[in-house]
Structure formats: structure tokens, C-alpha cells
Length: 168
Image (tube, rainbow, N blue to C red; front, side):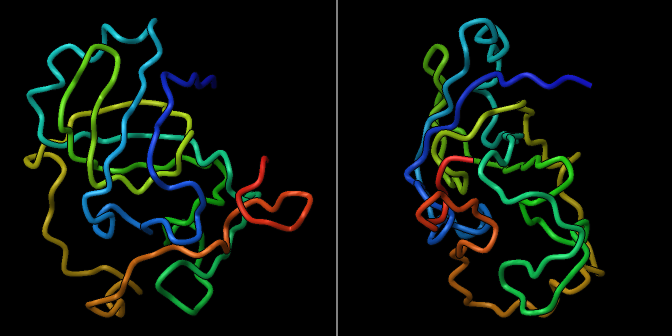
């Protein structure tokens, strides 16, 4: 299996601590997605979509764990029952709002991704395919309304000085 980065995500979020834990908590945060020139032809027709899925590599997450205490919870959970970044294959996905397409740059909002994150793929968000009513949402049913949704640094790599989000 081989993955290639097709671009870089730019956002105002420099560190995991304080960044939105999910798009729902991003509050309109604005960023850009830089598509590498060899992939820029792939953005044709993308401007017609209100939202797009960004699929990316959690390049600054701690090594994989099979059990974690996720954001917005206090109990350990199996990694596959969470959206924690420290996964065996550290892929993330976010349905950001597409503001505009300018050549190889995508202007986006509602972004919850750290600045400089490698982009793996883009797919259009299509409500007919991507939105399902769900009655059973596991431990997430206990998440209280009104949470601030800001992440902490529990999954961030530490640099040599012990600071979170240092180089991996």
C-alpha cells in the first residue's frame, strides 16, 4: 500500500491544545488547502460543492494506542470507538465548508486541522450519501451540550523540551 500527499492544509491552529476537537466546534475557523501542482487538475468541478471531506495524515500524533481516553470523555475507550489521532493508520477526515477555489488553492472554513498537516485526499460531501440519522451513538450519547470542544494535548508528540506538538 502506498499513500502520497497531494497537498498541505493551512489553518490558524498551530498546536493541538486549544484547537477545535471536531468541525462542529471550529466556529468558522478559516484556512486554505494547497494542492500540489501535479494534482491541481483534480479540483475541476469542486467549486460546486458547499462542503468537502478532507482526508489527511495525523503527522503529529503520538504512536498508535489501542485504548485511549478521548476528548470530551473521562473513560478509556477502544481506539476504533473514538476519533483520536493515535491510530494504527493515523488518518483523519473533516467535512469542511468550501468557500472558494482559486487555481490550486482551496479556501475553507470550519477547519479543525493543525497547520501544515499533509493532505491525502479530497471527496465531495453529498448529504444523500454522507448524512444518516442514528439512534445508537455509543459513549458519545453522554457528551453534554454546551461543551467548548477545544482539544488538549493528550495525543500530541512532545519535543525534546517536553512541549507538545514539536517535530515528530
